[in-house]
Length: 421
Image (cartoon, rainbow, N blue to C red):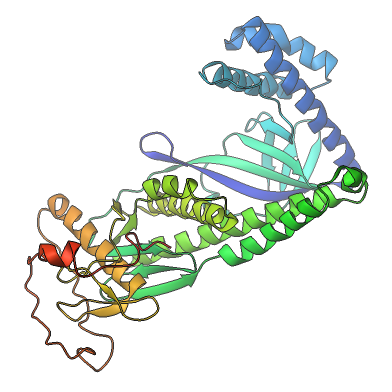
């Protein structure tokens, strides 16, 4: 995520495994910490102890004696409780008082935990072996961390501050077009396509919903508890979310690295308005997954650009796959997902059309920044050997010529204004 000016805050997530003889004790510590945290939040809100000194005087001894927390962990506990309580009190639309459910432990570097080689030492004599983590950021100092226990596994998340790289002056644009089946990124010279993870995520989503529908009657309540049906349903939902998250991270990193390698800026469609419109549609699970993938991919593309110093340009998504990138005329359908321009004869896949239009709009935004025009994209005249399948003469394209009103609003039409679905 973004940090203060000049820095980025990274989260390094690693899998850890405690020594067998101390695993039960560590789980018990996490449970006591969770109970102490909920007690502290409730007491801070009730007593209005919103300063660190008042929270210390109110809770420190109680957390040590009642919940048997080590001194430093007791301090970390009321510090976390104070942040939760202040955030809830400042929210004008308060719901119920926040309550921690997951087993986690707030850790302070050097005081509550430290990393020695392949082991993490937690205050209290607990040692956890690190199974794997990203070693690329080891040169940066460790910040606050969270030790989490979920589904029988331990995870340690460490927050680190790294310098924000300066953005370079782009030599061109790498346009990104997101669709249901695949994501297309490129420009007038290169093109790459990657399949989305929608179908795989939807598969697990449907499995969960089938189980929910089958065991939704009251007579099956015992089945949900005793036979692990509810646990299975949660597993399928979590699997669907993880598939989308993993896909978005990998694709966004590939896009950002390609842009950095060629010194391109990344241009993506601003999908905020489209997402709000999709929310108004009937409750189709595929639509919900599309919303999720758009949000995830947009977030991770922006994050990778910040981390690598790649400039990013949001563009308007309207009509990106319905007008000609050469002459701005309305395109006609000419087969499955193929469009043809009646004026200049351009015929291309609708995703390729969208990429060229996104690139063109991004270059127009770059002109005032760069101090001069960059090379405008030039789409190929046709994709096959026949210059015009309909036998019409191709009109030459003149830079800067706009389409006539009858071309935009009358005779020719396109199927989708946005080209996203």
